[in-house]
Image 1: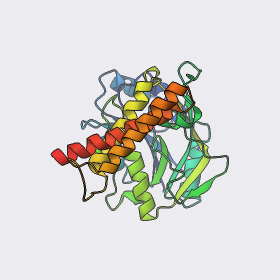
Image 2: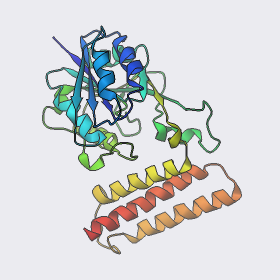
Image 3: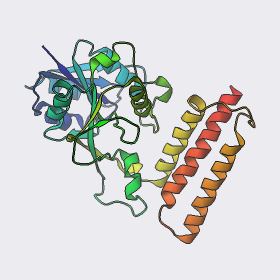
Length: 306
C-alpha cells in the first residue's frame, strides 16, 4: 500500500508546532499518511511539545533528531527516513496548509503521474501591512509564490517550485539525488538556495514536475525579515555562493574575477544611486541586484584565494 510522509524540518519554533501538526492531521488524503518532524538541534522545548502531540489521535507523528546543523541536512535526513514511503511532502515550520493541500499533492503524484509537485505560497506579514519599499515584485523573496489559478506541467526555469511547499515521489531519490550541502543554511541564518539547485537538477533530469494552485500554504513572515538589510544580505549571500560554487571559469581574470563582472557590479550600484536620488520606484530591487553582483565577486575572489 502507498504511504505518504509529511516532513516538517524545524528549529526553535516549538510555539508554532501544535497548530501546524493539528492542521496536518485534519488534512484529507486518498492515501494513508504520517507526519515526521526533523528536529535540527532546537534549544527550546520542541521535544516536550512533540511528545505531548504524539499522544493525540490522528496521523502517526514521528520524531527524528538531525545533529548536523542546517536545512540541507534536515531535508536530506527526511529523505533517508522515508525510503519505505511512496511519497514525501515538505512543509516548513512557519507555515500552515490550506484545506486541500495534501489532497492536491497526493492527487498530482498518485493520479496525474507527477514525480514532483509544488503549489501556491501566500505570504502573511506580521503587521498585516506592507512597508512602502516592499514592492510586489520582491515579495517572492519572502516566499510568495503564485502562478495562476490553473494547474500546469513545469518544463523550464521560468515557473519554479520551492521546498517550502513541495512533494515528491520518493523514487526520484533512489539513485542518490539529494539537496546540495554547499547551499546549506544553518539555524536562523539567511540565504541557502538548495531548493533552486534541486529544481535545476530535476529539470536537467527530465523530472515530471506539476504545479497545483490548490496545493496552497500560508507562510508567516517574522518581523526581523521586514528590513531592507535582510533583502540585501540575502542577495549578497546568494551571489557569494554562486561565485564560489557554480560560476563559470574565464581565461581573463583579475584575482579570479572577470573584468565584465566588475563592470556589471558598478552599473548596478550606479543605477541604484540614480534611482534613489530621483526617488524612482524599484530602488530596492535594483539595490538587490547590486548586492548579488558584489556577492558573486566576493565568492569568486574567495575561490581564487583557496
